[in-house]
Amino acid sequence: MVYVLCLDQSSRAVTHGVCSVFRPIINNKFEEKTCGEGPSLGTMFEDDKHLQTIIHSIREAITAAFRAASQYADTFEPHREFYKENESTDLDLVRSQDHGMNLFKDITQW
Image (cartoon, rainbow, N blue to C red; front, side, top):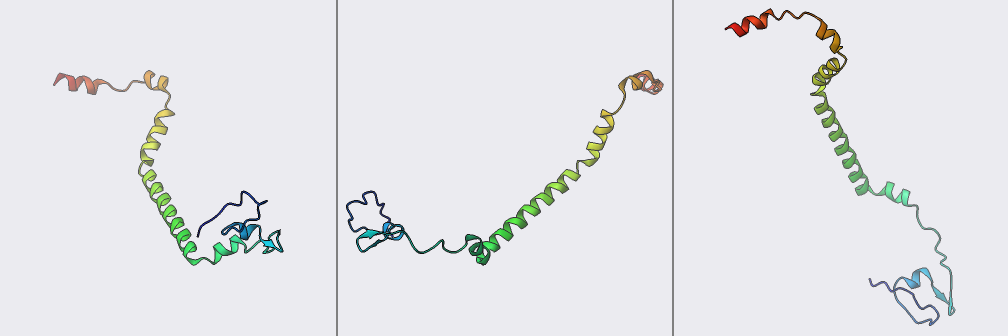
């Protein structure tokens, strides 16, 4: 279908395409459209089974992706806990304690 723009409405030339739908000529006068607002898009989308199938598939894919990302993040949980414990350690307290370094002295003698 060829769409023709109605740029010159004063010439009242016969045009085919979009003009006759949006600005019909009745009795040689431009009339307002009288077809109403048309069907509700929400209702049309709800009734479209193919669209609903696509939406359902997209939701399933997103849910599966988030589930996989959550499982992957869970593999790092022991490392996160270890890091959290290290960050909360008081370094001054650790430095001031005797850690029994005799073990390391014995190793260096070998």
